[in-house]
Image 1 (cartoon, each protein chain N blue to C red):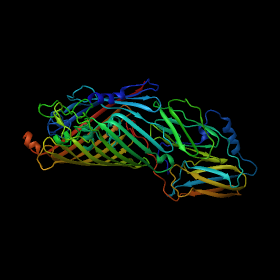
Image 2 (tube, helix red, strand yellow):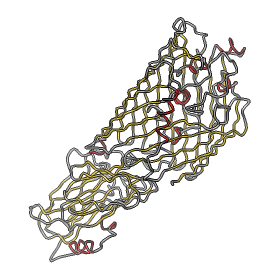
Image 3 (spheres, helix red, strand yellow):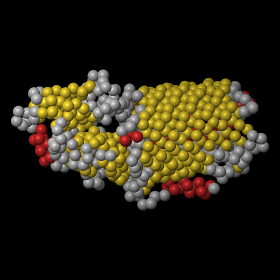
Image 4 (tube, each protein chain N blue to C red):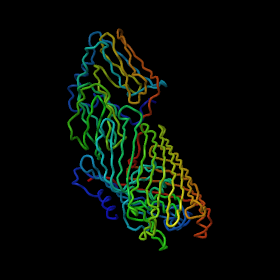
Length: 230
Length: 405
């Protein structure tokens, strides 16, 4: 059993959702490839009860300022069966995200998060150009027609990022020796302070373990029949 | 005033050139009923059930058609039409028809307005399309009464604070409305008390059969008699998508001295407070508590007052496509100063239902319901025993279609 994720939840890495332009993906993958005497860092995230926290967003950046974010990507967040797919999307800053609506009914997507405010007036299909995200932060998305639709885009300036797998683990290879700031985020996180650790990467491999102090917030309830209004 | 009512409701039917496809739904709900109910309130009896002993076997539960038509970016019209298998005034009639104005939220705040005819936002139970409850076939006594006598025909405004979209755990909502054309609301409570049924009264129809006694009310509820608008105010707090608390204060502000010869009824000055709490767990359990407390007054020559209240507790468990619901209802109506007066009663009911959503088209359900009630008027008017235990076993097969054009 994986903590924090109700069955049916889909969490996708932007690399899995790139459809328009594969070139930045290759660039991003190349950036993660081993360099000279590089180390790997394994991050594991567990809920307070010790269960793996799948889908946790992990970002890794050098402790010193002056690093470059990962190259921007073109990602897709679809709308299907009155839900955003994926529910959590992580993209580097300056990335753009397309919001097609694959449902038969119209949606109206909005965000009033400080990292990016926008709205896409009532639509079906793919009538609008992608939305660009230039500021790091968590962008919460909703639909003005269907209040149960809720999704997040995590815009990160970190050069390395990813999503914890079903074992609550995510590994980054090719880190040059040095000190790195590792952050963890999850939509159901209820921590009093953001989980962040500074890890000294000077051997290979290095691991960083996070154990949440508070129980997760309740996960959204899924799978209601179509005839239920709300 | 009747013309104005039609204009208000008619607003919902007017399109301004559909730029967006309309979404439509149709459903046919057939029932097989076994019942030992007394003569139904729908046939001027004092029975608590929609299908009484004389209405068993195959019955039409509901034939329903609904249309939602977006009108530009932020307006949408919604119309609900139904046919029930009894002798209503019109073979097909509307239960709701309104235009909704839904502007884009700004910085966590959102307003919504509805103009037309619709239900006040008080039932956390009637959450399925067509204002039906998904938990049972028959809604609670409270929702049954709302469906029977209450409709907002007017203007409603809501203000939402969407905290969950700003990283918080709570959303808040305030609602206010002014309305007319609901002055007879309360007359059915004072005639037969509460009942347990899914038969919603239509906007231009009446409660069941034509009145056999030409001196008694026509049972038409959506009329304006005193030219005094009513109002309601309410609030809602939501904790994520797990818990909802809903509060409503309703007052139709009817002038209880006004009589309509045409309707053979009074304007009933009806006010009530309603509260509902719904909690849903990760294990797919639902707990739903409802309470209603109010009174209605008429003053034909002297003032007559009825007090009414009802409480309901539902426990439901969803298991994939299956839903099991168990509900208890208690209800009472008291005519002040006349414990055996019309409408006076007290009773309670148990409902056990199982439903299965086979796919997006078929839903099957079976429900057992038993209601015990003590209605002194049964002895006075009908020569029956005042105390009655009525029960029914009902099977429902519903086929739905939806699409857009």
